[in-house]
Figure 1 (cartoon, rainbow, N blue to C red):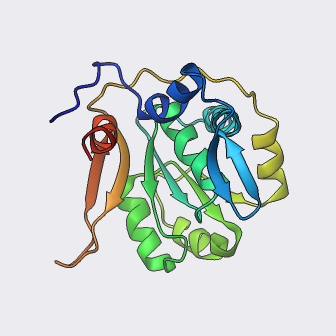
Figure 2: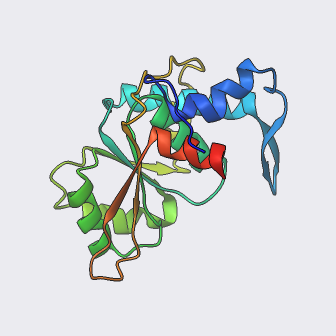
Figure 3: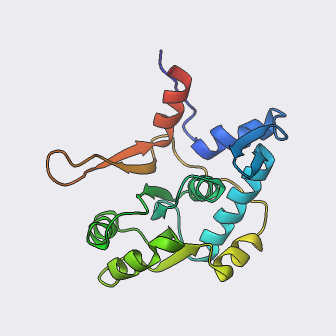
Length: 194
């Protein structure tokens, strides 16, 4: 069995906006230790993140490092980045700065969204980063206020189904970790087929 999405296909729309259109907006999408968030809640946060990133100068197809722990902020950053047509680069927030430097150079990410306890390592890594333009810290008051103040509506970018959505990295068993580029189709295909 294979899933063949339409040519214009954004996986954020497939996983999130489609739930709203089908009438499931008030259903729980995330269950956390602090309560649950509905699909409408997640979409609002993702749209605010997409608007924030756009205002910060991120453009479709550029890479955005997300080095956040699991939780609502990670989900909003993931879907917000994908909704605006940029590409998520997932990094472990606990990496040492030397590895972060390698990933920043390798991915040519223009923005990084990081945890407060990872800020120092990312700041050290950013010193030689040729492409990184901005580093935003989750939990920092100014960043949180700017995201919360961003518009709650966002028109999802019309990605091609074969556009990159997320860069994951191999474990580096043969030496250095390698990028495994996941398209918009690949995540939906996994959901549909497995």
